[in-house]
Length: 380
Image (cartoon, rainbow, N blue to C red; front, side):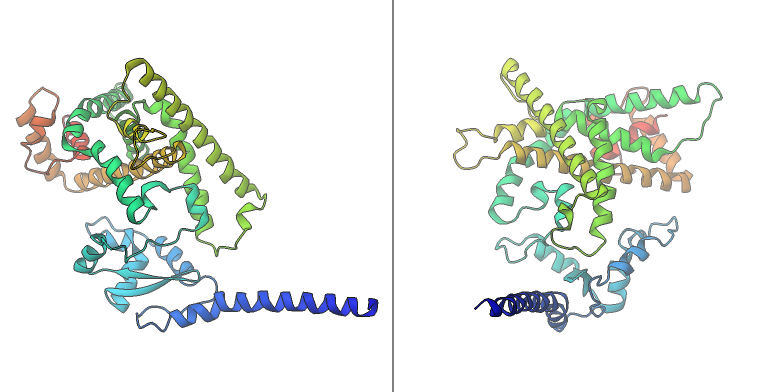
């Protein structure tokens, strides 16, 4: 019996290796090639990387300062649609994704009430950066969305205008101090608007100032770079748990952010005990539904609240600061529109600071909270 033991062991090892090899062959080649034949046009599948290298290269192409920003915002998707049509296929590693470029089909997907269109499965690294309502599906998404929506009703936005003004005044004063010595100075507005939108988000959504949330923004920015770097490489199951320098840094950042947000939540809960109310900002609304026995139909955990805060800090700041920066670039390219916008603000507001009611009379650009910020800047 002993002489057969080594042979049995070798056979077991070979069986395991063969099984792993067949599974790898199936998932890395056979299944993707089978999905490739579903009838949607796109680039042929390439082992492991798919279209990821082409997508990274497309992002590096230079941009021209025109309104035709789609080739820059989504260059690879844009060129894929030009080549294969408004419904086409791209490969993210071994996973096929369908590009939908037709407005009516997009509308059908966004209004899906039967849950037949599922959100894509996230790379596990992405979960360190963005989760919350953006990744939920079905009934869970509907209930979480219902909790968050009241924070963005028109009446709530009206109440945020003083906070917008406070943030803008602080920014303008800082700019005036920079120009006081020589009358002019060169300024990189991209980080300036990142700070501005970060301050607005902190004040209006979480009841804190930018200085309090500054460290969170900085860590989220670093995390975004690390996560996107990992997401652009083929995902190897379990690799994220290896103690590499970047893996450890990702996990440390995640722990730091969660700790700071937990402290912010505890501070909010303590103020609730003193004032008897959580307030009507985003954090207050979320906390009303966390571990509250009165909410029998739907409750969220403190961890859920933390994930929503992380998502809002990251998505809210980047989108608005990019929008404001691009607005200023276009206004600098078209000074005639800049002059018309400034004249309109001065005509309607005079020496008064813009408020919600006066903003409704502007015609050059329609009103939105972010535009309110830029309009205030036009006065200077």
